[in-house]
Length: 399
Image (cartoon, rainbow, N blue to C red; front, side, top):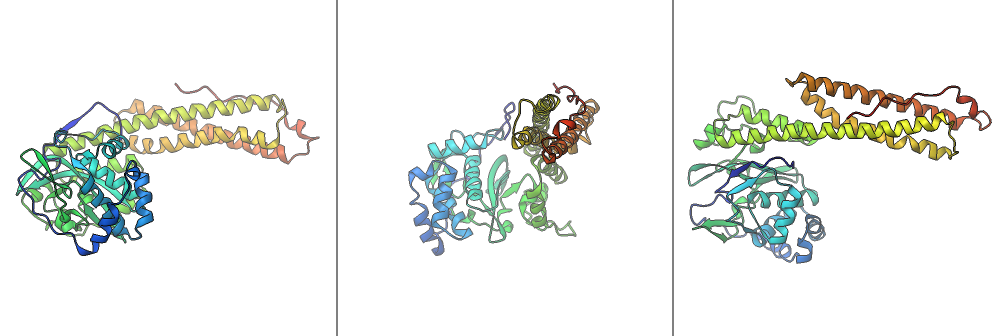
């Protein structure tokens, strides 16, 4: 995630189950053996998501067993940090959150969710962290909460490892595993979990914010079913900026009457802005590196490839500039797609000029690669005749 000025959203219900004792369900028989093995995960393997994933993959074979191992390990080994549950920092670095959670064995909803999602991805399960808000004892709690989704054997399920770990009573965390939030059906979880982005309701007829407040489980106003499976497949193919832009559109379309939803939209926009600036700066960096490398090759060509190098070494000179320019193109592409609708025309013109410059030097690199191919294919006695004129270096780096 991106480092910007902190925007802290109060989350007195980060664990969310604050209204007294929550009924728990017995461990389903099929999971008893899985739980036993999962809880044997050595402390040395619980220090990083990768080591956890290695243990889980070596111990379990099915999607459900792997997801269960992550869920039950979190429920039994991580305690909810009541004191820190008053603020969720959506700008925090995910890797740092996970490292701290595994080291201290404490965390809030964001920490539980990020550990679950990251380990799930490492064991081979498509998984994502979901942000939204919840309903407790029939009342909507307009504070942020985080939970997860993962695809098991081709079907998407929902998981809330925070609510699954226990509850808060009188300001104290009570650790008690709740089976209701493992592999939960979307139709069930929507009764008390509302994602900011309606995509993650995983429902064919996503409900609106007012309908969630009224306890509706479906949206009778929608005449055509929403294919969330197809939308997730598209989401998986999108770059970060496109994901954020589309999520903002869906959030806006679903209503932004509540402050918590407005705050999330603001957060998304800040991330988008930061992403555009960061990618633009990185594109400039790689472009400049590409230009420098290309000009170094031109100077060597103008010296008629002296001092002598092998053909392979001459070819290699253009490899790094080519890679740098390709990286600049990849970084700038989503920025240009986003900036096509910008109101900042001066910025757009600068980006368009950079795009042309990148394309220009890319063409010149291809031209020089063709020259090198011709040079290497020419008899050594005739190679000197190829240097019939000098070649001009390419422009100047962008500042």
